[in-house]
Image (cartoon, rainbow, N blue to C red; front, side, top):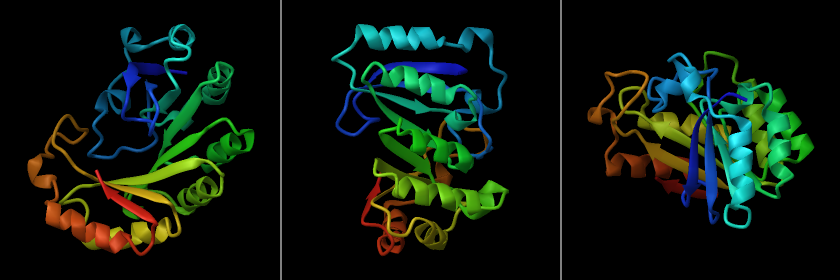
Length: 223
């Protein structure tokens, strides 16, 4: 596992739990609005890398105080050692939340079969952003929905890249799901440095997106 970031305490990233967060290096997509360019397009420097033992030893010391480990990135599923690492964490009786873009549906399937993830968070992109056949994405969506685990789907909306009406395609992709979060683009450090505050939607526009998605999903929230 190439771990390039470690946040020891969070009250926000696993609903209702105190968690630690690790950030894996590398991604199989190049979203222009990604806020972690250092994990995606910049070389991984040796000084960035955090050992698995560092994470595991911290969780052992905080046993009873840390409920969960959130694994995000980058894209965690491209890590060859992801599954063995998760198994080590599960031995500590720690919950696992896994963030993914769902592109590697075979890896998603294997993880679900092994029953080692407690909470799934899948980023749903617009079909044109994948640059690949979206069948693997749709398959990951269905498997996560049918996994019997807690899950959420979410999309970052970027004005100028996405249109309000495009939300309908997202709704169709996740039809029947439980939780969907609308994330407005916020200016900051991104892969595309030209993106700025003008690429954020207004509150009224976000409500329009929510109205489009609501017929498809049980619970829709604007973040």
